[in-house]
Length: 146
Image (tube, rainbow, N blue to C red; front, side):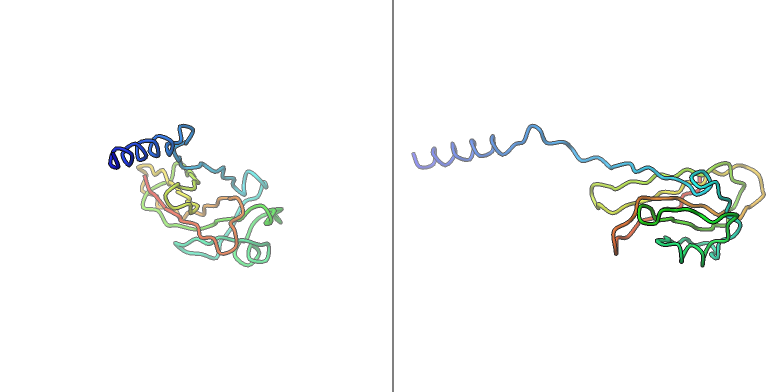
């Protein structure tokens, strides 16, 4: 009798512990802007080589970036990831995928360089305006050549 009561209690507990309204986690896709389109600004030079940096304020922007304009980036709302990379072939396009994966909850930016067959190996400056990171929050960046 005692065992039957325990089994019944476990069965009832397991039934009520299931949340039918529970939604499976999915990676949140976050919109990415670019300084050229958002601010009509052309970047002439970046004081980086095969590296990137996350710029969080106007002072750091002025120290790292030489541009054709004085930007109006709202650094209270956005951070700017900017970098330079030497590619092995010509460049067709750059795609940006910014997510916050469920398993880590750490923002991730995949920068995809779509290459072509030309033998011109360009030195490319890339950038992404991303939503402001919290203080001391890291950003995982993956540079992918296709």
